[in-house]
Length: 192
Image (cartoon, rainbow, N blue to C red):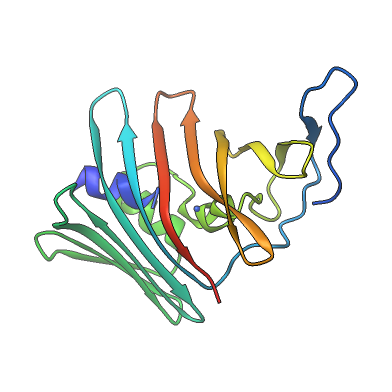
């Protein structure tokens, strides 16, 4: 269950110019505006820590008051699911055990025993910082985030997909000093 839960935690502006040396511009006041609130996402994740390494699939659907994250093995078998319905979060593992919480970060802390900010992942998937939390972002010449540092995480973005009028991350790599790393490759974004 621990790997499944870790995978769940995968399962989240302005003009940018290169500085005089040609490096991405560093900013600490990037707006959280532009976060994609309603979407369907399919992708692949891998998680690595000092103790273990695993990979699998991720399906995430988010709209209104509801949200479902499903983690699967590389062969498509369900590992864990998190559902949010009107503010109540329920994590169900592959054996059918359920845990509930009102706050996703509380659920993560209770399940993992560590404060992993799953609540920030929806922002990070949109290449935006979690609101109200200090951050540093690096922007390329087109204004896209190439790196975001927040809450002890370093998130690098090296590929984007065009979705209508916006560009959304297609691949990100996140790491912490404690040796925890995860990669997310988005195979399919669906946005309204």
